[in-house]
Amino acid sequence: MSDKIEPLIKRAFLVLAAVLLLAGTGYAPEHTAGYRMEMDAMRPLLSALNGYYGYQRLLKEVGSDETLEVIRIIENSRYPEMVRAIIEVESGWRVRAKSNRDARGLMQIREIAAREIVPDLDPDDLYDPVLNVRIGVRIFERHMKYFTAYPDAEHWALTSYNRGRKGAFSLKSSTPRTRYSNKVLSKTLKA
Image 1 (cartoon, helix red, strand yellow):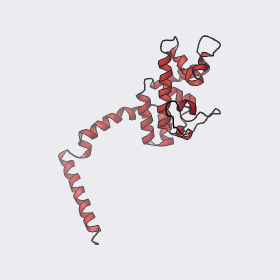
Image 2 (cartoon, rainbow, N blue to C red):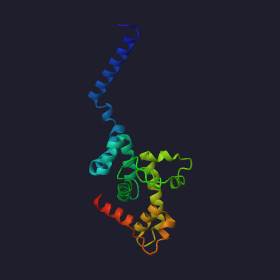
Image 3 (cartoon, rainbow, N blue to C red):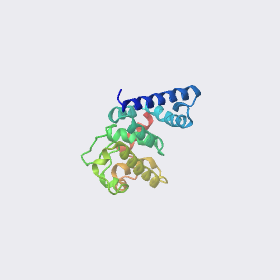
Image 4 (cartoon, helix red, strand yellow):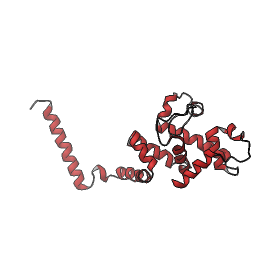
């Protein structure tokens, strides 16, 4: 055995022996409080992943780390059902979705809207699902906050998310019920 390999084997053996000893005494990593807390924090995310097909579709497209972070952002938002429905209507959970108006990603965000939140944004960064959802949730929550006192606040906020605030106010009728807002709200009932 070479002089360089022998110390590595001894060190590996010592680490293995330590892990086995710790496991026998209940101090292995899976028995520590930190590990249990981390697993407890993951349970709701994994439950959400198993319970919603949109998350499963995203998992197939981008992998577990990004999917779990997207789930965390959505589930911790004020309106998780609405955000899931917006993503379903806007992109069908396709990360690389792009509209003819250059809206990008899961929540179909345009560069001009995203720059209000991230001024030095590269437009292609909107294809990053975590960043896209983080920005989209903030935009939607701003619309909901603005329209909270309005009758049909959800319709106003959704129409404003889709058309912009000026677009929502420029509707010929006094009601903000649009095909888009109706479609999103119908998806919240199925989510």
